Picture (cartoon, one colour):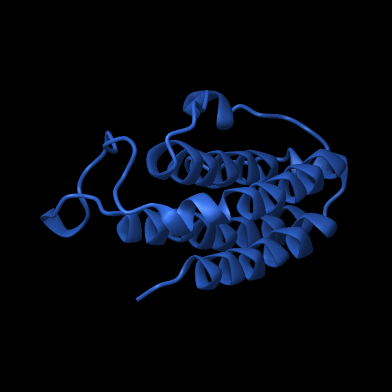
Length: 150
């Protein structure tokens, strides 16, 4: 069984990767769009991944009101300092939500997305999906960083 402590540990390791990638970029590079089909900037990727994680953890599992502008995430512009600060804020959120996540036995809200593997979403499934979002976008961020610094 996945524990919230395990989730937080691996989420933080992934966030370390976000910080390493962002630290390689200037403010211009963090907003640069790679010349690839449907590519996003590093800042947009960080904004989207953290917003998705926030929504799944705080809203879907814990029932907090979370305002999310998904399309705005892909238009976001900012600085490397702002990206690092957003990562730090997400780390803080993980710590604050950990007791609620550990106590959750069912989802506060039904996710308005496809069900994983054809079964209803569970707290464990939502935790794994939140991590999946962080991990897959770390890969995108690393590729984006490589492209815009080449």
